[in-house]
Length: 115
Image 1 (cartoon, rainbow, N blue to C red):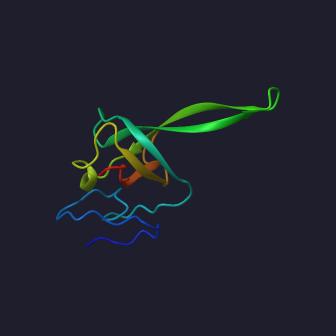
Image 2 (cartoon, rainbow, N blue to C red):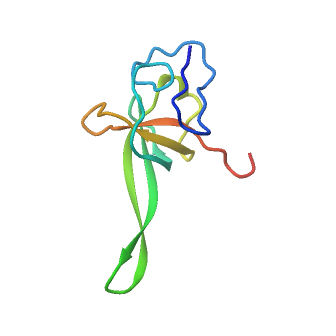
């Protein structure tokens, strides 16, 4: 059984068994706070992906913007492990701290242009 997490355009993956207690769809963890999108750059750790997101920072001295990027360690639920790979655009949501570096959970893969 999966639950509705209350975020528009996010649906639970259709999988038979997911016993991950940190999964927002099949476990007990709640999503609250920031929702962001990024690109998966690493999937080496178990149950963890590193995503990179770009943003613009205003520099007042020059009255210009510069492009910057940041990386987040995100929990990858068991029900999404097979569908998420390096290079995919994903949506992540903030939750309580899961470990020292992880406070975000992958919610799903975003549709690419041409798919």
